[in-house]
Length: 399
Image (cartoon, rainbow, N blue to C red; front, side, top):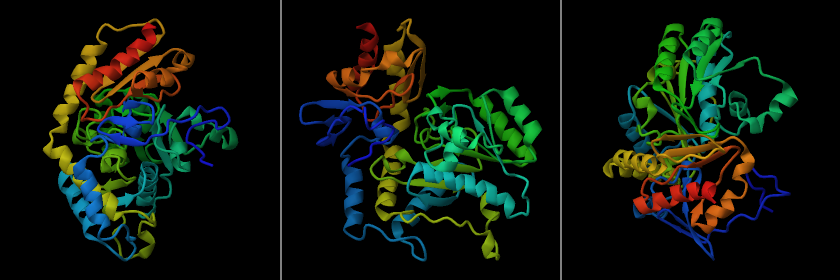
């Protein structure tokens, strides 16, 4: 029996069985629907893109997988070289893993061990944001502030080594003033907090964070698993404010195979580069650097470059703002739009009960959570398809 994610199995409705997918469309035996959330924000090029399919096929004919322990291969080298050349600053050192959650775990481990390798055992604390989400593994759940994971607090109590603050500069400055000697890192989803409620904030907060991290020698981690590859209308937020460690996932492979990358700058990498084997980064997922994933990730990045995706994303935001202009409902708390993301937050989550079925009948796949109805569409979507998604969202409140 399949145990489905984020569901109470006893009461969950039957999932839609997909028999085919192409472009932005998912097909069941009875219907077709636009994937308005890009399979959890990953399928930016749509389904069955010929370039991505060919990248996987051509590598599959050679070999599907070898481990990176004592071995290497061309696809992982090409992807690493591409990211080194493509990413800003000196974010040059790529550690690969098989999911965004694991990629963030690696980043947190890097940050702690960076100081331990220097003999500093006092920097045990992590600064994070309220409403943060950084993954489903144990440490990422602790660092996050997702209410679905508050059972950890019930079981273990508040971890004194995790500090959460709102996206307000005075709170940021106060946290650094109080805890800077104990902090190893500050981790954020930059500009857009995804699963924490699609919350958007100003870049001035990140610029001040960079200044404070420099002042107090604290590592800055950007979790761009959700925000990377254009979702905030920036290629990466790291292009605007440079972190010490960057985590990529989801859209890294265009959503075709699970893969992630934790990319460190030279400062962090040098903290591990030593004759002493005890200072090595002791982490090694079985499927890190998988050749199929690396091949399709390389092809996905080239598509992003050559097809001018940033212009597509700006256009998606323009159409979204046009379509939602003047739309209001007393049940809606706020409508937030940034790049390729729109979120309608309602006061009462019961307002969204039944929306998924309603959207299905309108030819749209959606998956609201808590108080949030949102869309993160594939970037290849047409204007008519995008308007269909947005008009379906509005129609729910206009019934």
